Amino acid sequence: MPDIIQLLPDNIANQIAAGEVIQRPASAVKELMENAVDAGADEIKLIVNDAGKALIQVIDNGRGMSETDARMAFERHATSKISIIEDLFRIKTMGFRGEALASIAAVAQVELKTRRQEDETGVYIEIENSIVKKQEVVASPVGTSIAMKNLFFNVPARRNFLKSNAAELRHIVDEFTRVAMSFPDIFFSFTSNGQEVFHLEKGTLKHRIVQILGNNYNAKLVSVQENTDYMNIYGFVGKPETAKRTRGDQYFFVNNRFIKSAYLNHAVMNAFNEMIAKDSFPMYALFIDLDPAQLDINVHPTKQEIKFEDEKIVYAFVQSAVKHSLAQFSITPTLDFDLDISIQQTDAVSKPFTEEKRSSAAASSLYNTFTQKNQSHFIESKSELKHWKEFYEPGKKMADAKYSNSQQDIHPANDQRPMIGDAFQLHNTYIIIQNLRGYLLVHQQNAHERILYERFNKAVDGKPIATQRSLFPATMELAVADTVLLNELLPDLNHLGYLLEPFGNNTFVIQGTPADVDQGNERTAIEKMLEQYKHFSMDLKFSKREKLLRSLALQQSVKAGTSLGQKEIKNLLDELFDCDMPNITPNGKPTYLEFKKDELDKLFGR
Image (cartoon, rainbow, N blue to C red; front, side):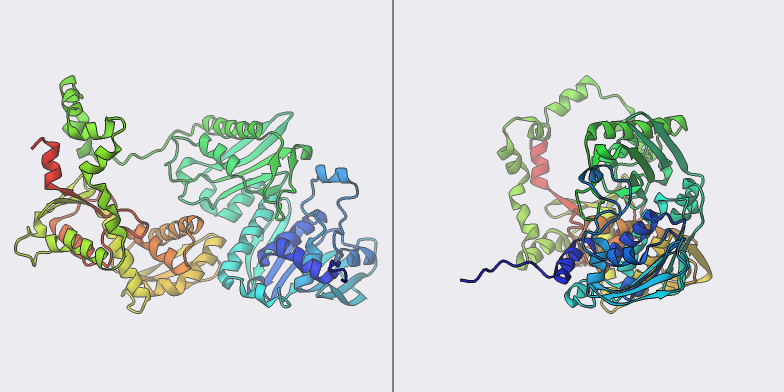
């Protein structure tokens, strides 16, 4: 039988490497920009068309390449940064794998123009499918211009897996900002479809952070600076009041290379302990300088995941440095416990828990249910938790449970039931209403979230929500990444009653909003919606539309602590039990709990 193992042709081997290195347009942006930094450039320009699918071009004024080097750069495992094995363990350059340009040339049409200072003329090379199509001498400024066109033109299956232009552009913005933030002493510009998105002049690190993340951080950054013989750390963290519900504005760099590290993020979060809410994330841009021999950056093809020789030392150092900076700048905890003054004055809060009350509480069956050992069967029999599955079974059981437990007992059309007016609010958060078997405890925010979600679902499916036009349209300026995101969401937002018009330079005009958004509060509502959307984007694998609906429902729902009148309570309950699935929020939290009268009787020994 003939031998069956054979060496792959170079073009196929390069395409396999491209699968690891060039996963989307943003991957190529990262590789090309890092090469420009390594070339010693102090001006780097990024140009993209069609979110990088049609064109990605990086122009730099670095040292350029000779004719031989320009040709060699596209060979597999060709690099100027490694010559002996020991070099792998003391890498300080950005790009070094020797696969990026070969991979790009395997999946795009590439044009390279480059010239060194000592050469009178430059060289121009065209490559397609790893094959050099043209090479000639040209007039060229010092530096390198590399353009890749029609990404994945020869791998249509890969091209079909790319996301929408807006989604791919957001990834490009992410990669651009990571490189630009690392090198504030380099000028960077970013042009998309002929429009300049970023123009970042050389300056200090603080200046670069504010340029990228927005002017709202200008007076809200705390400097971090600690030096030791083992490692140095410098950069900025945001004051506690800048904490957001998303991790978006969090950057870690090791030897100027952006990295992702849940471990080091935990160190920063610990430093902010009790200064910010549990579900919030602080802003930080922190740079660690460390001997390259103390870390391994060959863990992942994107080089964004690294391993430290001694993680515990780095963790302790980061946590200590951030804590020290927050203390030095007199940053104090800013937790808002949101306790209503009327709650604080109730007997349960203001009066001491006497020994008599303690004995009384300990004698109750409810206390025993939760304190007796080995009594899981006792808890189940007491609360009848064995019937919980009925709420999640599809079809008739769901419908029967929903209407027998709620609507049939509550809706005012049934003469045997108390009217909705009998409901009352507890702690400005819960609504209590009696039914035939006991009572329901409704969480007002969870209930309203379910109502809004179903209302929005119907709106995007063909029944648009009416827009309330603004007499004096407000304008809002966003960070570049948020501008790209909002442009992506505009069509669906229009169905949901938002009328927003791009006004250039990352600015939008708010021409109208849904009627239930307070006039004068439009800008805040949209900003909070974007934050909530990014929060869902990190944790949930849903469609863009689904994430938008959930974000708006959560953001616009009536919050716990809001006082409701009888009419508002009645409307809320009516709408809740008209929902297709009234018992849970879109995220699976209960909207109400049912307490049965016979269980209440047992608690009191009756």
